[in-house]
Length: 301
Length: 316
Image 1 (cartoon, each protein chain N blue to C red):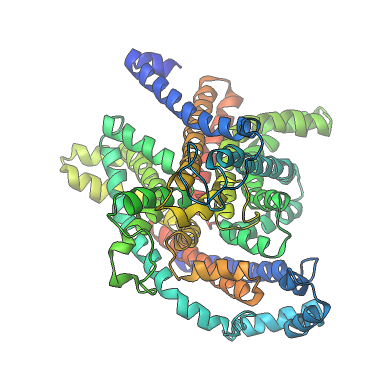
Image 2: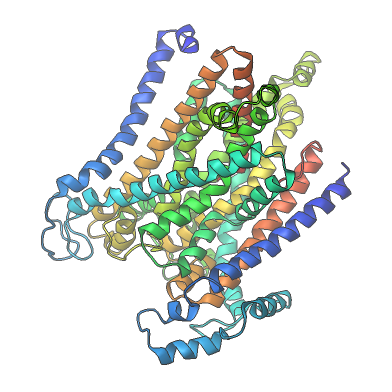
């Protein structure tokens, strides 16, 4: 905040207008995805394919495109959210366990297999897994979570490592504090900020994978009401009726760009507040956070 | 650590990764609960058909034996035979590699100068209007799914304005015969990697520009271009080389999607077709090939980055 005030009113206003733009980009597709199914109403009968009846025309099997657009965001957003949550649910305990353990072999045993997963390109792993697993949203959630898992575990381990072996931890050991207090209260709370800020980045990755997989026809029904599936299926009518493709594609792009911009602002925000807290321990945490994000940026997923 | 020693360590890690990835591919496609033969039979779970597929895949033999045989075949360069077409998988790879290699190669060729240009422009005008505009675009485009971007470009420039052909149908896989076909796919493939690389270059240059050695060079009166190109840039390049290798991961996903959107008969199309047809040997062969390429590219990049900045540790 202080930096924005110091830069004068113009800078603050510009940054605020950018925040509004980012939020709007994110809010429109999210609203359509969440409230759309309630607004869509009863599915109308199927007419002729690729006509211009109705506000957005009809799709490849003659369904109303507007209705499909309203229904189609739920699966994209839902699967991405569920997969991110699942990756955190498994990845954070694994990473914290690897960081807090004093047995080196356990650390290696937990982290090495995950490194192996990182060596396989994400989309390849997705294609490979869904080639044999039964198709459906649950499978897709599990696969995307598995792909996000190594990064989540690595980041939580990296963030927890200095906390788990620092002087504060030694002191707590000497005072015979309980494991719960040391591991959950001390380390868990210390890594909270880093993980929260990172969740946005993970969600972006999950969203990308889910949408791309659905577009390639992996793990979804061929006529599902899903933005990515709509783009794929209605491509053949692009010259006749572009809205059936352009509307869902634009919503996917808006969602991705919006999440990106908002997550970027959140990341910058956490870095600011963490350096503003001048406590010695907190500076250390901010430093770790910066390093973790730096490493993650180079990771490039 | 000396370069040969580092190279040795890194080579061992790469070998372990290749073996590990091959094992993962085998386990995922073969040893999953639920017989591969049943999966392949799909909509017609006819017992005779399942039995026939099972004997053809030799699924009645123990998993360990099959794994060893598969690895031995791989080492001899035998990728197996497609279940659908009956052709050797190696032939499928050779037949489809052309367009994929062309797309990936052209992207890499354009990527480096473009990212350098954008990154240096933004860094030279740090905090200025141009820098802020570029940064907003770069952050926004960073993770846009390729298919959505591609279809929007096709709808605008292909179908509406008619500037470029909307698909590569009719080129018969020879994309160079009609270079206009390449424009939209390359734009889509370049979008994400240019963003990530130019961001790194910008950050690296700004950090270098604030460092003591650049300040000293400036005091000595070195002219601007020499200061930037000769002193600031090389130090910003080590992470860029590594990120360039990591983008092969993206490029691979991007190529699969771009081939699907623009109907290019390349390796990505072959892979997606194999998945649709549940053609296990083709999936295995293509996946191992792609994974090996990824590991090798990363290995090379880590060695180059080590040569540029020897402090870098073994990438894990």
